[in-house]
Length: 483
Ligand SMILES: [Zn+2]
Image 1 (spheres, helix red, strand yellow):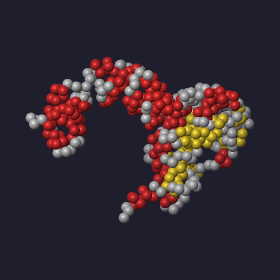
Image 2 (image 1 turned 90 degrees about the horizontal axis):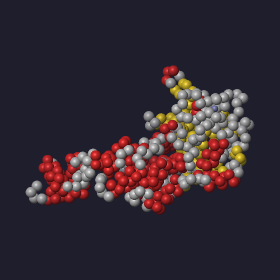
Image 3 (image 1 turned 30 degrees about the horizontal axis):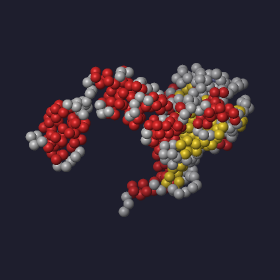
Image 4 (image 1 turned 120 degrees about the horizontal axis):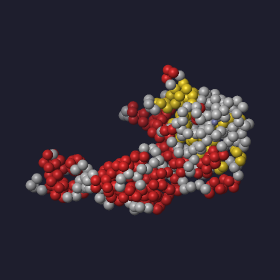
């Protein structure tokens, strides 16, 4: 007989999720999309605005050429077709952070149409369109004192990248977002700082029985800006929709807000359709003309993209594809890997240390505080068996903080491994004397007792005992009748 839990999970597995994404990215131009105001993050509220970006009557916008160039470059990097004659439209809605009561966006004639991005594992995700638009201001809720408005963000240029509903799992979404973010960073159109809201994502999700071809009713979750939240929000919404359908009710087309602190989503409003916005061409703005020759020129000027680096890392250095994918999630990591790979041939160890330890120390930023030659030296020490990985981590932490060379740190702090067999034997004997159970366990066939012994050896030597010699010591001591 099935338990209720098993029944529930078998029902879950009858369904699949269908996801599409809308990603908003703030472009890294120095000035806003229609005026000369600065786009610096962190300026005091309402110090970077003017009549144009605050939407005062009678002000006239002038399109920033750089915004078009950046958006077109992004379109080309995503293998999309550039629209020769684009248009900008007004998207009408009222919200306190939008003083004009419309947002300039693009409706039928966006900058780019029909591209794709390859995610980990080789699946192609279709890109429907890429258009430019302006960001809105920011509401700052001050509790009992009310809500304040900061217009500094009004008119900061954005691109919106809309995907096809090609995703079937949260992992695919994460992989796509990582690759998309890396691509935009590699072509230098945005720093994509997620914690500053410069790279944020709306998730459209519906569910259907596996094998069905018709799409279910979708809901939208807006403004997710961390990979961890996105994965959690998707899993939660999938479970919620399946539960609604299984209870015999229908999914309501709506916009939902993800509350990360509660780990739940809440209905915000019924979802608008495009016609609700009453799009019409902005009469103050000229069409955007991009000639075929300019498009060709821009295509030729594209730098190497993350996928190019992945191929290079696999072919030139023999790196496994999954590791190569990790190495290109950050531009500085990819460049740094290239630099270090000229100085050491321990390519796999180098990649391993970079995607774990170096990326941990970077903490989501793009700055690397260790010189390529110093990291290569450290990797050579590990790869040559001179120091173990846990010592290497300690040394790397200090290299990061002080800029010192690895050998200097090892010498100064006496971190060379203990390789003296007599010393190790003496330590091993005293451990087994204090803990006879380890020997008894091992002799009765519990081989994990060796792990316990190694742990004690590392503890006694501050992590410096040579592992191979220590194991040898253990086997010698326990089979020696004198002990
Ligand atoms: Zn302005």
